[in-house]
Image (cartoon, rainbow, N blue to C red; front, side, top):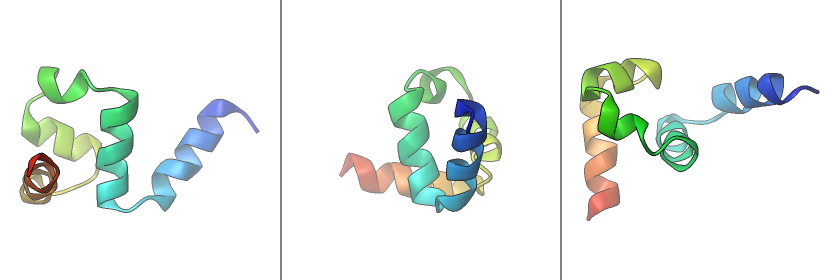
Length: 59
């Protein structure tokens, strides 16, 4: 199985928190370069959910 296909399947199997964690681990620069609203869209999450998940991780 190709790497891209495996990444896509994994992405769809993860819940919202898992997608946030994976994107922060694989692409930490995204959260610094993209507005929160665009990052939430990329992660297929409402902006409020992304904000809540990020707050939980910082505490």
